[in-house]
Amino acid sequence: MSWHVGGPTDEVDLDVLLSGTIAWPGADRVRAIFAAARGGPSRQLVVGLGGKLVGYGHCLTAPLSEGGRAGVHVFVAPSARGQGIGRSLWQQLLAVARSAAVAGVQTVADVEDRRSCSIAAAHGLIEGPVRRESMLELALLSDTAIEQAVRPVSDAGVSLVLFDSGSEEAWRRLYEGFLPLHGSTPDGVAGREPPPYETWRSGFSEPWQVLVARRGKTTVGMTMAFVRKDLASRVVTFFTGVAAAERGKGIATALKAEHARLMRDAGWQHLSTWNMEGNLPILAANSKLGFVTITRAVPLTFDFEASDR
Image 1 (tube, rainbow, N blue to C red):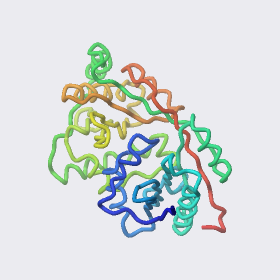
Image 2 (tube, rainbow, N blue to C red; image 1 turned 90 degrees about the vertical axis):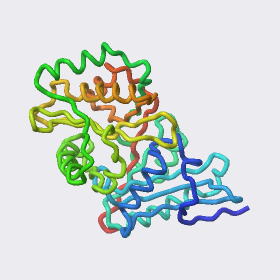
Image 3 (spheres, helix red, strand yellow; image 1 turned 30 degrees about the vertical axis):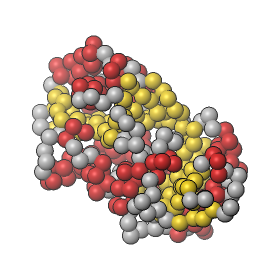
């Protein structure tokens, strides 16, 4: 029985294959990301075998990952491995990235998945700094921990408020405030581009998803979360950032704590987040609130020679 490669259609439910796999944010979010990239070289591929979806790959050339690289995702169902499907997807997606004249590509693997890491190494990919996915069971969130995180920040004159405007103009102003915060994060400094407004807006359409820290009328930080529709009851922190001049004052921890409380009280059960393993301040903030590590992932990069671009 032979397999075939094509483009995804609206009828293809990618979550059936990919939900719960490493670094998969959910089909709804991926669909929005590629809708915003329409017209560019970014590409998605699916693989069918015997009438079943057994493989998926994509190359996202905008926004770029760290180092000016395209983001690549390749997954093959265990039952279909060993037939060259992953190799075919990888080669096609590399060609897409080269056509976009980017610096290279970046993907990710579970640190414990030595098979995938070995395959990546054989293809010339280089491992980077480890990232952690941490989970907080919201029912176990301590009111004492929340109070200890929020009160000192409140006493210092910083208010934590939900973004509650339905105005499109207000959302655009919020996005303008998000951009410099994103640019000063470790990912931003490393060259990861922020999502375009259309993608960002589609992921954060409800006011409860964004909590803002303000000193007077000035926004000094924010945290944002999106819903994993493929994983019942889970919300994912997409971003937490604080203005450089306000760091070291507990604002990030307070934002996380208050946002977690609001989500807990609204009935959500789990909150997860991804952070660089070297970002000790944010990991310390997570630990204070009761987050536990559930996944350790390693970015894998492959850079093109200048003559290939």
